[in-house]
Image 1: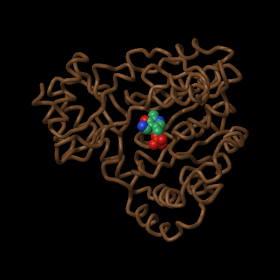
Image 2: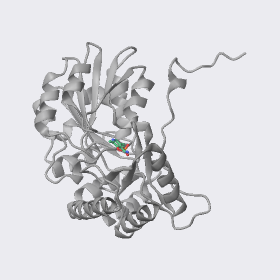
Image 3: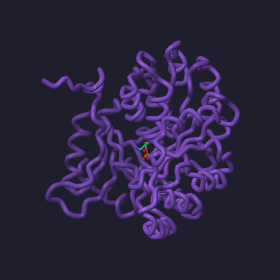
Image 4: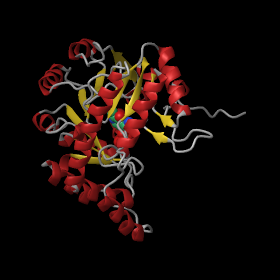
Length: 357
Ligand code: PMP
């Protein structure tokens, strides 16, 4: 008889619930469930992919030097403090693998991103959930939850799925108040949607205990290629590089990301269009009696009156060919997270919610 078994705890990990991308029997489906850039990647990234496709027999760069240099140049950072991963998901994984062991604690907020919990459990650590105040991150509650076993504190800013943001002074207070063995991970997946916000990069340069993660999946429109990066103090980068596989990013992904990050005009245009349509969508929903939290990202969190109404609304939208995201798994059973699509998509989802109401 076989004795093959995973290490304890693995089978207790819930599978990540990704959004649907199709609905049986419904044509013209619009997907507003994964916070993607509705305009796709910039043309320069498509061109870079075509060029890189001539080199598919070659292994990719192991040190990602060209991409790190491009990120450093564009964001005015130190390339030696950058590490790239297969989406920011992989960086979250690296942090948990490298910095936690059995019985260590990993703090995440009540309405925080699901991968923090999953990666902590895969590493064998214990996720610790901290309650939020009216859906807004509560720095005092996080500090109160810290113990001698706390190794990582994950905070998305802007937060997914609430879209809310914590000010830099509060973040500094959090970093300052952490126990000496803990790292604050500022997840900036949506940072580019906030004009003038550096995602916490300057804080990383000032402190030894802050890491910032970023992604190419959102404003750069490259979710399908899976590229993310982190900015961290050098000693932490050195540790994470020991956990990283040598060829974790394909040469196609590296080339596309490098081209995309240099296209600042595309980023500006995407941000401006997102702000315009997000404001329009939130107002249109409000006119239909559906309030939403003030979002700083590329989605709105629409608040229905009950879990039953949220479920019924989701089912109705699906019949109309619209996929949005239920967020019960994030402790928000009465809400629906709706990504800001292009203008026709925003009009369609607002119209259908009006019909539902
Ligand atoms: N952090 C947050 C807050 C997110 O919402 C997401 C994507 N849903 C990620 C990280 C992961 O993004 P990726 O792995 O595509 O970089």
